[in-house]
Length: 250
Image 1 (spheres, helix red, strand yellow):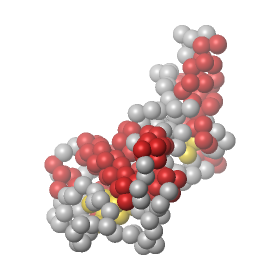
Image 2 (cartoon, helix red, strand yellow; image 1 turned 180 degrees about the horizontal axis):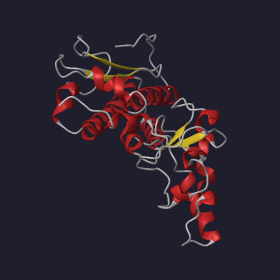
Image 3 (cartoon, rainbow, N blue to C red; image 1 turned 120 degrees about the horizontal axis):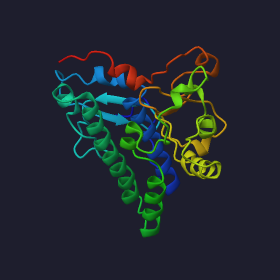
Image 4 (cartoon, rainbow, N blue to C red; image 1 turned 45 degrees about the vertical axis):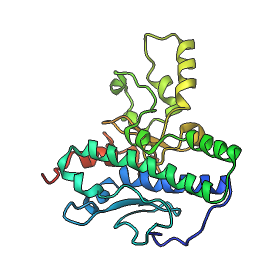
């Protein structure tokens, strides 16, 4: 289950963390920007399927490894069987939670295999814990707060505003200027890209776009929207919200 990527074994805390981030990015992609393709691949008529995230940031839906015990811990088995038996949002959330558990299992498997001591394990967990989970990214748990009247702005589309500009363009009349500045400073650092999970502070100069349905923020590059293209979008819907409007097999 290498997804076409060369096999390697991370041996240091930094290497294990990079491996974790790459696998996590792949799983987030499957559950957000590639959700339609992921949904279709999880056919309940097929055998037990698993969702894999690979170190090359590619995801794969496939049968579990045949060798026993497997080379690394295996993801949740049979995710496809529950696909049509529950609401799509709940099913994706369940897959996300199991994906988070698998990512931790793989990271600490490498830690045990290469003899990380107490300090190394604690450092690895701290680095992992600084990132939002797959579940949190998928559900936008840490997204920036928004005011209810921002759609009334004279701007053609609020969805093309960068997170750093949000409070100044759409101020809440209940706050003083000083309160707004303090609130913006606290919240902007918590703004997460709904596709890759990286926060705004890490990419402050990049173009962002906001979904007008779920109000999650995305790097333009993650959802393949350029600033020029955004100027012609009256209402932007992210890949997840677009897919939720389509009919699913019952």
